[in-house]
Image 1 (cartoon, rainbow, N blue to C red):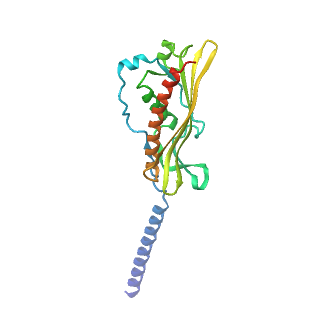
Image 2 (image 1 turned 60 degrees about the vertical axis):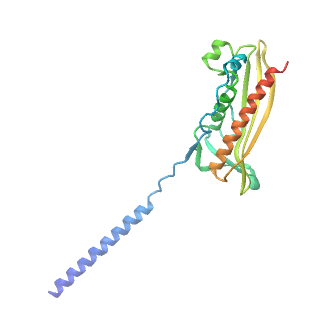
Image 3 (image 1 turned 90 degrees about the vertical axis):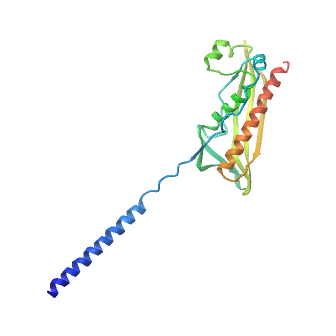
Length: 228
């Protein structure tokens, strides 16, 4: 009887030990599973808040063709929210890990330009059917080209930062012999960030883009009214 009991006790101990090993293996397996990736936050410039211009003023200004905004100063097609550490190496761009623009910055800026310039006139795309039917891409009509050269959250120190937007605007007039330059200007806008994270940089960049687009719209009117 004692032998049988000893064997039974030994079998029970082995079973308990086996269950313990199985539990440890399961826990180890769970720990080895890859962590669920954090979904990046998506940002844009916020809802449009531009009020429509009076119909009389809009009708008094001719339509303007706005070419697609190009971004030679940014990674091609990237929607990353970028920042620079000016106090360490201002030449290096860094992407925020968990923040993305809903569209590439060039497209967001183009929407902002259309809204601001559209307060004063009709804004057409170069490949728009309306532009073709109205002859807006033919001689005597103005074409605006914009190149986005800088669009980043710039840190001057670990505690001070700003959203910086720089673009080059070129206004040309279509003529029978080609394009005639009417004006070119580099716009730079910088707005302080309220926080030193992606959300603060995004808000500062959106604010800078809105003000810059408004200034560019005024410049377009000045160029158009200047005799040439």
